[in-house]
Amino acid sequence: MTAQIIDGKLTAKALRASIADEVAKIKETVGVTPGLAVVLVGADPASEVYVKNKAKQTVEVGMASFEHRLPAETAEDDLLQLIEQLNNDDTVHGILVQLPVPDHIDERKVISAIDPAKDVDGFHPINAGRLATGQKALVPCTPVGCVILAKQAQADLTGLNAVVIGRSNIVGKPVAQLLLQENCTVTVAHSRTQNLPEIVRRADLVVAAAGQCEMVKGSWIKPGAIVIDVGIHRTVNELGKTKLKGDVAYDETAEVAGFITPVPGGVGPMTIACLLRNSVVACARLNGLPDPAL
Ligand code: GUN
Image (tube, rainbow, N blue to C red; front, side, top):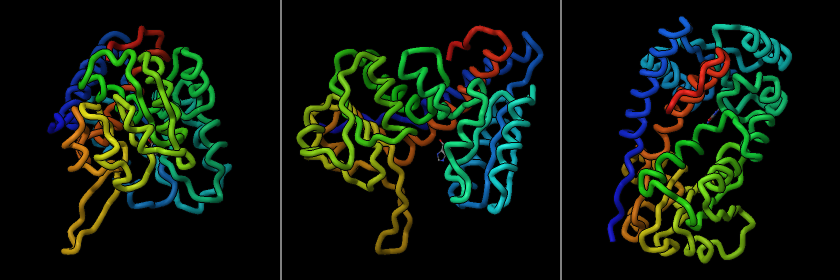
């Protein structure tokens, strides 16, 4: 079997087009431009790239983009003060503090300082709790992207055995919650899991979010399974050429799986598209409008 490729780039493009339509509708109905504020503390090169891409795509869908770049030595209190200011700013509907923050700043404190109604990362404990209890929430972006892509392979995921590898607050736990909502039978595996290959072999749907380059092997995959690869690792080959790889050994897995997301061009592009989606949803809710059909 050769797996069908699930095209995240194309899916993200289509989602951005729908978001642009919703942004135009909100502008027309209530005269409000959805605004996303991104805060970057320090100059981590990977974060710089993300923040630049976010700003570009925010403007492309017609939203307002606010960027706050703070020096690495910024005091925690100053960052918290900026967040408070953004919480109270009516032109800002989404607030994202780029992670990681420098070590002297308490990440949990920062996340908890963001107004849950503007928490477009969905990392605030209120949003995590709402997601876990099946209430209306802002849901973390990468997990939503994973589920959208899995549903491209199979529109109804009901009854599938899903194995999530990784238990982070950003991906593993929320993606497990979303898959439960989709009526999957969910197993969350992690670094202490025993017999991981055996567990993965039972999965109709695998979400690989362990953060380990090419750890999931082709021999672990049930024939025809849907494989969603959240990993992104920059590798350099013997010729000095850079290549991005995922948590899944792609070539050998694609020979067995039914559907697979590539790296790059799979989950990655979905994350920013879902962030824009959350920002528009947050803006609609803050203005008393119904949730956009996105
Ligand atoms: N750093 C890497 N990914 C993310 C993300 O999705 N949100 C935030 N805030 N920081 C990140």
